[in-house]
Amino acid sequence: MNAINIDDLRSLARKRLPRAVFEFVDGGALDETTLRANQEDFQKIRLMPRVLTDVTTRNQSLELFGRRYDAPVILAPTGLAGLLSRRGELSAVRAASRHNVPYCLSTMSTCSIEEIGAEVDTPNWFQLYVLRDRELTKAFIERARDARCSALVLTVDTKVQGPRERDMRNGFTVPPRFGPSTLLNFAMHWRWLLDVALGPKIKFRNFVDTSVDADNAVTITEFIAQQWDLSVTWSDVEWFKSQWGGPVLLKGLLSPADAQHAIDSGIDGIIVSNHGGRQLDGAISAIAALPAIADTVAGRIPLILDGGVRRGSDVTKAIALGATACMIGRAWLYGLAAGGESGVARALSILRDEIDVSLALLGCSDISKLDRSVLV
Ligand SMILES: Cc1cc2nc3c(=O)[nH]c(=O)nc-3n(C[C@H](O)[C@H](O)[C@H](O)COP(=O)(O)O)c2cc1C
Image (tube, rainbow, N blue to C red; front, side):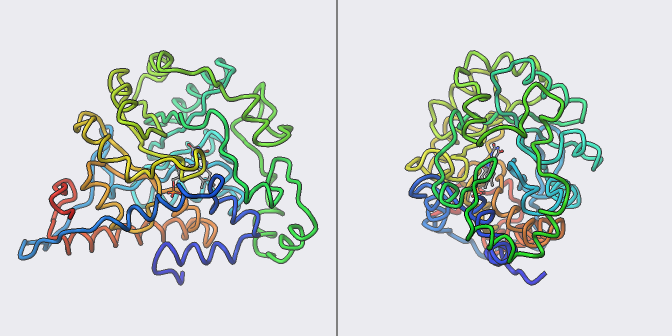
């Protein structure tokens, strides 16, 4: 595949996908200031390399919740990946397993928890949106356990959906409200048409045979308004912990005060995230939020940076600032759209190679030794 960096994968994705689908992936909330800040704030960070150190071998492997992984990168949960490439989540989990990095399945996936569990031997993570129907929420937790998931990720920054104006303009709603120009644009993307539009029906497969008919949801926003539990608070964390019985991570924290709350509530991991700039526009970037949260957490539980990672050096910067690992969202989605499983694998090898070069040039042989001394 002709892609030497993540931005090349983005260009390929842009060519391969109909505009409405590409913009669904690429876009963010309102003026997209947080979306841009996620990347720009990484670029503002300058590194301070050290010389004449032995970097003959470099190690970027790490241990997370009792398992050893080959790189400090986790595939973030993303809904509707099957819209980018046929059975997209299956391709992603295969690529993650080949690279020995965790894959986190979204509640809103187009392949079910069971299909993903059966696909690979390695355990996956499951991301849960808290639904009003507690029995259904509980059923999801049980299904994730039966499918050998090893960590439960509660996304807590999505009480309502962030307004995404590119999607509104494109009629990208469920069901879609596509105008003639959008339909013509779909027709012009024949490879995508053959692969996705003429493939198995796109559904939120985790909801098939449940009390929620996700097929008939009028729009995603309405679906969320109907199903998401807006009343969840810190007092519910204990319930999730006891239902799951394994590591529970909170995804979507930006405030050190919330990080402290998480620690006090016995949470096992924090994902510093603004949902890739798709929720509160104007929110602090993930990388800018990281240092204060890292100071609060002080190494007591794993800390994952999520948002804006497009280069291996972004990963080394986040780890130097106190992260244990990084989640990537669009980076793997662009790869998926560009080339299915091999595109996701390409995204992962690009980042792995860039992390390796970054370590060598920083004069650091082991990623676990990175600290703020490599930052200006
Ligand atoms: C198309 C798309 C769908 C997403 N769906 C979900 C989801 O279902 N659950 C969730 O917790 N986060 C979701 N996210 C957010 C990602 O998990 C992650 O936080 C974000 O993509 C990180 O930013 P990045 O894309 O700059 O790496 C989604 C992001 C995108 C781009």
